[in-house]
Image: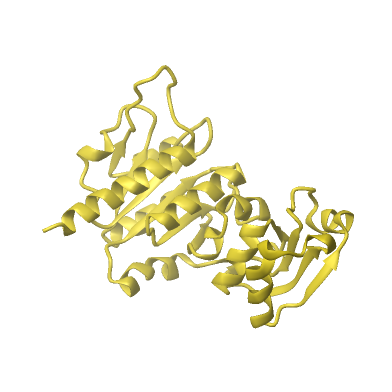
Length: 253
């Protein structure tokens, strides 16, 4: 496992989910001194049960700790999130007794998009996400805020060479399906019930040519309006829940 850079995490819901997940060491939670009330009772109760230090600060002090005024009166000092090795990530589906369901992101650079994708991945029951080491958003505080707790729940690997990583998955019997803005099959016409990895490209550029050529198949979400494509996080949500739909349909008597 490889630790990501340590950074403060702020916002009521992200900090609450961090405490619920109990996946990272929380060194301190700082709360707005005049902000104590029923809305924070669950958070304070969890912090007490986990033995986490709680301090009460002024708004300016919280802004300084968070590096942002958008802290909602709650800031946590935490150890950095942890990246799994690819081997550890590939072992997750067997532990859960399910066909593999991964996402790989090809240079998604906006941490808000990464956070939203992690949230969709968690909601759809994905086993993990693969990120490139370069030209990609990582597990930062900004991603954690957008993920609203999913950073603590979705295993993430970070690999130097995404195409090589996808080749490794293919050798493990995992079908690699790339998402493209045009030219692919509609996802509901593709069998998504087996072991698979959905690959989504970065903002604006989409999949790089080498990554697209590595895919076994390309899919495209049909657009009926005048816009040519979806935001990558919206496309990820549609594809993730198409996987869920097909897999639930298989279980229906």
